[in-house]
Length: 246
Image (cartoon, rainbow, N blue to C red; front, side):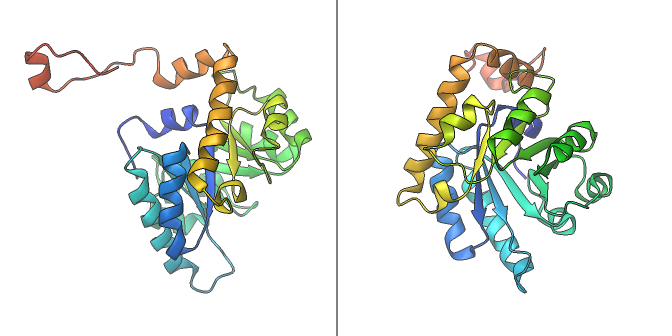
């Protein structure tokens, strides 16, 4: 689990999530490229049908966690609550639509952010209303995204963070943003790219531009840091009167 700036704050500021396949031989290099290109989150998608999934998930998330250190990126896991408790990712998305977020919270603890995959408007309503669900992944389809944007506007700091998901590419990202999404989760758009780092960079820059072009997003950034955000300097720096980094 990563630290420094709080996980909840970094989740609110996140724009690009990469859902990476559970392939131990490849996920480490893929995560490094993705983070380097600007991905805020790399989430391991465990193959629940794989008989050796438990072992590969542990190796895969360890590789993602190591890659995350260079950029202080967030780590994620999409799978089973029991495994999430063992793996300790920053973010966990419930793979089972019937899984209970309350029970999941008891398993993963207070520091892991719990997400819910929402494939219908009813799913979105339930996830937004549930106190133990911290973020949503909404899609596929522009109608699902538009509904989430109406119910939880991305520019409203009171809204839970949500990521549009479902076959999103660099070509379709414009339509997704126009539908109201300011955060996206992609898989193949990075995983299958000949240059994953460049693919992540293109997506992240498009999202960065969208945030910068909408002045309402400034309130989301401010709220992520809190009303009394401060920077605590080490005592030796204070003694020398050093200026804080900007």
